[in-house]
Image (cartoon, rainbow, N blue to C red; front, side, top):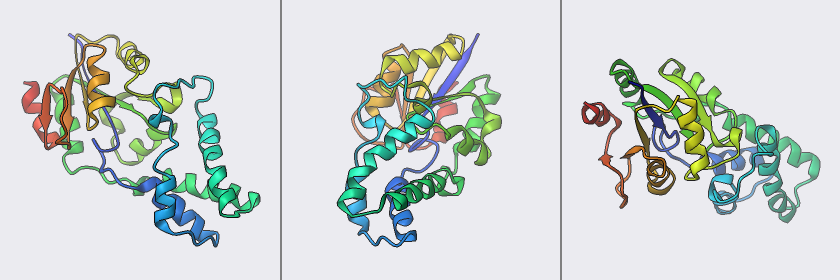
Length: 226
């Protein structure tokens, strides 16, 4: 019998934070542009593909995902009179910061929980709305040995909760007999998982949802899987 667990990343395995806006703020500052942190934060609140899951972008994955993201920053740069040559340097520096695993902090029980689930006969998969190189971050965090494979939105062109990304994940896992979606978002993770018949775990969140299980800590999950 095939058993699979599909794990969200940000807010589920690692602590959620403002790494995107902070990274852009630091990159701007590094190149001599002293724009207030709050101004950067407000602009960076929107513009990511996961904010518009209704839009598919299967022809704009991988590096093209980054190209589209940086095009979203162009109006911001123009409004703050940032030279085009500097904007290119800022983009490169910003991306390098985002791809630094030291920017991500694992929940203390993430690794032991993944290990325990493996011991229980489950295969772990990442299923995340995220940038193309997320797999490198997971490997740098020392988690690669716990995962069978990865489904990352920026590599396939669909965002959770779209049914296509969940169907892709199930196909990748060989259509397991038992499967769960584990995440912190009641829409992207819980509703998305249920749309393809997955059982669901809502973690690190006390918002209202239709999750099958709600857990304060990841360490609760193995006990509920028994």
